[in-house]
Length: 335
Image 1 (tube, helix red, strand yellow):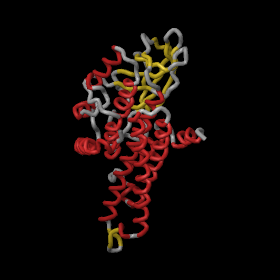
Image 2 (tube, helix red, strand yellow):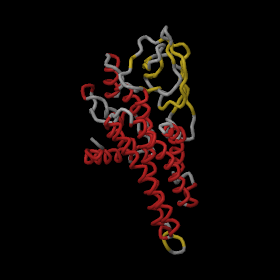
Image 3 (tube, helix red, strand yellow):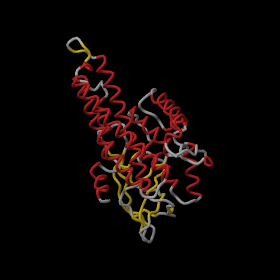
Image 4 (cartoon, one colour):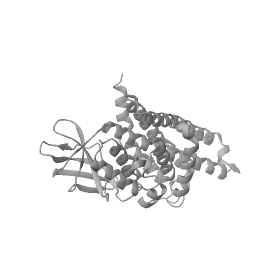
């Protein structure tokens, strides 16, 4: 099964998302719940849609196109993926139902240095945790005394907001200093699979914002005149726009392959596909937005143009869940 198998469904989902996002750049939690985005990957038995990551990827791409400020990455993509990776339990089932209904906003803390000792005391720290500040519950991935990955649902963690240039994202530092964990939840899947989904989700976001910047640049080049003719008729501008399109086309292919691989749930390839999509797409998006800024001329550098919002978001996306250099090092190790 591939993303093209549900092209019509994805087109409808894309159109609805575009309509919702056209109402404003800031989308609150209740709006996402009402639109059905929160419960996409939650099984229908818990009030969700029972869809796959392919549908989540469509929403991520549209959020990037609009440079929307939401809690979607941390409280939906990461959280639902982590909950679906847990072994069956009453706690997991209750959380899935609460998230799908919008009663609880949960944030997943993954990729930090948390450890759970033999007395079930949690210590560690994680930086740049998406959407942790203000969340009702936190799910912390930690390594227990046996070396296995477990998930802790605890209170008493210290959450400190971290200011970043990208004002569309909300990240925080989460620390634990000997917090007691009542009952750690074992993982049925792996923490790496959640990180892969996070990396591909960010790649989808970067692809969307790059597409938006290409559309805006082409539209501007058609209407802005210099020397009595549209600047889009000049060869230098044509070549620059063509270069942007080539980068986006390559990124779209890599992202599609990564999404298909994650949906197919293959054993080894997800790591490779996610690393390729994340490293190329997020680096390309920064270049595309930078070129858009240049081709808009002086107005592109103004606050009113809004291009700076996309540039800051693309730059932050490039570092979230592994820089291009880090992912390429992982790919190089295969050889």
